[in-house]
Image (cartoon, rainbow, N blue to C red; front, side, top):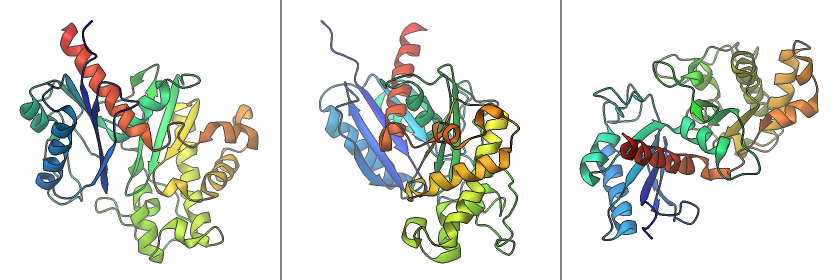
Length: 303
């Protein structure tokens, strides 16, 4: 009996990367490294993969990456990172680099699309046919998966940069997004919180006005996702989302903004079922990357 395929999975974020390789993603070790400059980060990724696979040969690699990212597999720039404030990452292509290095198929997607893919289907109590995965951390991103298909258009969604109504107490804050200033990410990301108060949301505590402000903005995000996509579940992950009471306050804001327009969502119990933390905890992104590796392997062997 032939061995199971050997995959590598990589989740690259604004501050950290997770790297894993193995034949069984459930038991493969997760390695965490800092996201620094491309050369340094990629060297660390390669060393981890080589150490994990030993003398074996990789069958495929999956990458769930921060963006903006070229996700068009037919493009000559497939996997290339677009305009980003992360030093020296703009224009870098981790997918093509690893494909040359390991001579195997590599599939690349946005980090939130990868997380949404895993949350929708990964060996859990039930699949979710239509899920929106939100991450709130160094940036804000949203991935949408419907019927096991990632809902990209010309590229992946950039919902983290939508315009939202500013809170009455927040009009003087210019926002921290280097491209749009006070878009959602510019107002509600981890760096935006730190820029206002010099601390993380968790450190500020549940009585600090920062919690209400963050919930105000994320509640608007939830309403936009509901009205645009009507997902079964909105999963909220990322470091900021782990702040005690944030999801509860976000649900309250969302319920108030929806009013009675959608009767099936017009109660606290419905909001609690709709807006939830990740079922896979911190493994959503890396397991999504494993799924991308599986798809890359399947595509290569069925073409």
